[in-house]
Length: 283
Image (cartoon, rainbow, N blue to C red):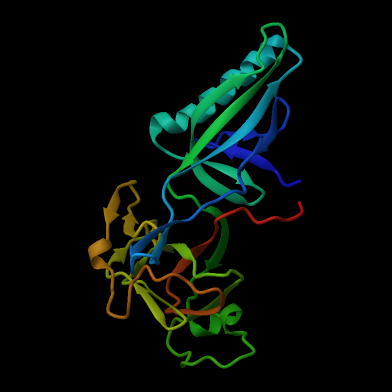
C-alpha cells in the first residue's frame, strides 16, 4: 500500500495510515471533467471545450489512541495542522505515494464519538483550486566555465544540431514519460545576464541581470516570471520576457528533450506530471 499523508503549508506532516490516524476510505480516485458546449440544432450539440474547476473530495478518518490525553492531543493536533492552511490561505498537500493534491481541509464531521472510548470517526472534506494530482521530476544543470570543462554535457552518442564553440557552453537533456505536455518551474541562478535556455528549439529567455545569490523563476502554470533578490524582495520580471520565438510559458513535451545554453549559469527544471486521478502502483 502506498503511503497516504497530508503536509500543511508549514511543513507539518500527518500520516493517515498510522495510529493515531487511520484512513478508512475516500474518493481520491474519482474525478469529473466539466465541459462547454453549443447547440448545433434542435436535437444535438457540440462540445467546444473541457474544463476543470474547483473540486471537493472526502475521506473517512478514524482517530484513536490508548491514552485519553494522547487521544485528545491527536484530535487537537489534526485540527490545528489543517486549520493553519485555511487561516493563512496557503494550500497544503494530500499525498498518495509521490503524487500530491494541493488542497485545503474545509469541513470536519465527527461521528461514532463517545466520551469514555478513545475512538472517533471523522468525515473530512478537502477542496482544491487546481484539481489535478501532481508528481514532480527535478532536473539540475550546472554551469560550465569553458568548453574544456563540459565533458558531462558533451558525452552524447548522437549528433548535436549546432556547433559547440566559445568560452562557455552547456548542453544537456531531459527525458520523461507522460501522455501530455507538462507545465514546469524553471529556476535560474545568478550571476548572469539575459539568461537564455533552448529546449528542443524553443527559447526561454528573460532580459534581466541576476547578481550572485539572486535567482529567477519562470512558472509556466501560474504564468509568472520573477527575480528573487538576496534581501528577499521579489521583483516582477514578466514584462522582460522574450516572446519573439513563442511563449516563455510553452509546456515541455514528453519524451526526449535536448537542452542548450551558454553554460555561464546553472538552473533547475521541475517538471509537473499531472493526472486527473492518482496513478495506481505498488509501493
